[in-house]
Length: 131
Image 1 (tube, rainbow, N blue to C red):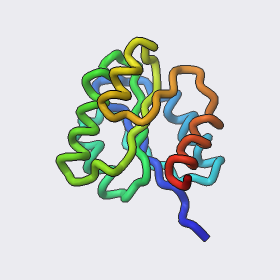
Image 2: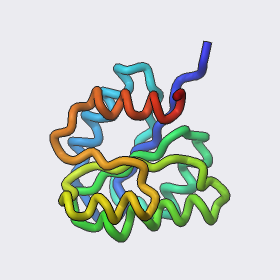
Image 3: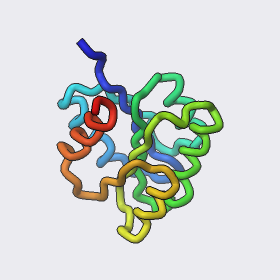
């Protein structure tokens, strides 16, 4: 039996809204994944350290504040600095379509915009971790 996929969700920066990430966390648990939620207002360093300490398979970042172009790449940079650049990062939230190519170029594996189906996210993570 394989171990459960471990996903860390974080809200980087000053974003204070977490209803969406809580819904997504529950949906992934319903798909049999283990979800760790770091809570609101996390720094990129805190997120990277939590990902390493929790030995997660994937990091999910949620942003509704418009700081995704700055904060998502900084989380990836911190993971790389800590020797954990192998942990894939996915993102979601209120992200304009014109920002998606930039985030993908900076290393985010996939962006799930507001209103995306939770099954799509769960299936993507399963394929990413167990191809």
